[in-house]
Amino acid sequence: MSSIHVTTQVNGDAVEFLCDTRETLLDVLRDRLDLTGAKEGCGTGDCGACSVTVNGRLVCSCLMLGVEAEGKAIETVEGIAKGEDLHPLQRKFIEHAALQCGICTPGILIAARNLLERNPDPTETEVRYWLAGNLCRCTGYDKIVRAVMDAAEEMREAS
Amino acid sequence: MQYHTPASFDEATALAATATGTTRFLAGGTDVLVQMRLDLVTPDVLIDVKKIAGVHDIVREEDGGWRIGIAVTGAEMSEHEGLCRDWPGLVEAMDLVGSTQVQGRATLTGNLCNASPAADSVPAMVAAGVEATVTGPKGSRRVPVEAIPTGPGKTSLARGEMISALHVPARVRGGGDAYLRFIPRTEMDIAVVGCGIDLTVEGETITGARMALGAVAPCVVAVRGAPDALVGTALEDAALAALADLAQAACNPIDDKRGTVGFRTHVAGVLARRVARIAYDRARENQ
Image (cartoon, rainbow over all chains, first blue to last red):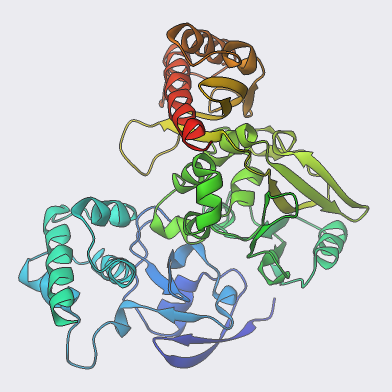
């Protein structure tokens, strides 16, 4: 089976790639575009380590084919910082030590940013439900939730 | 694997009817991609339905009902004010499926066609009286959604057939629906029992009732006797007890790690009482 040519946008940049029809978007991001921020945890949509947004919608990139990215706008953790300036969520994750091994962190950052874009002032319960599909096996969730709440507060004050 | 993006249902069904080897339709992919990843299903032909016109839309039909396109995601349903106002139980049931990420892709039609006995949206759809348009090479027919699943992972759709739309009835005045499921934790799990109900009232008196159970039999179970237990009552204790008895009598569950036969049967009665109370309150407020 010959590869399919896909034209898409990743973190604001126009991107073209060739991929096999069976490759997931996660495979394409990591193996063809060298964007290794999104991780494969489970490969079946349970852990959220591969979270990205597609046209502003949070999805698991392991549950989407690369060929489905045609004409879409994809955002990954690599696009969160502006050059050397970390996103408030990234700074707060460091400040609160909200990561240990770091495998879940890219997915959680993308998921949390997507929440704060929709709801700048979430309750702790709303944060916990929104992130229920992002599993962390190291730090537990309290530090992550605290970092998200703190980042949300800072972002509200800055806006 | 061939990957197709047909622009019409005619093209999609023609592809499916003439394809050789294992064929799958792809909408949100939250089941198909998992099956591919786990080597449970390796499609030779994958037909992505998301380029077909109208499949992403929730449209008010002339009779006041809602037509839900086959690629509409759970997230899009939860964000749709009109649908949430008319059918909160149906929207809540779909919203229970998976995480935020899964909601961004999973579809109501996919939840139906995956034919899991534990699919959360299906009892809610049966209670709501949702119908599906089935389109195939020989044309289209409209069937109640309960006619689609025929067993775990199996549907009544013939080769070349697909669902082309779901139709939610118009919300009548004095109507309200609800769905609850039992899982052993707060989120991210599969129903041990699910129960959907739709009630209509005049004043305090129930005039119509439809209830369905999930995860207690190979397919969704419509509890046919629900009107006998509820119509003419104001949901007094006796009516709730009669409804719970009917729910338990309708159960034909399996014993597994999620729940025993006895536990599932017991919980079906508990959930029947609870959904009835929620739907009754909603119906009375909607007069």
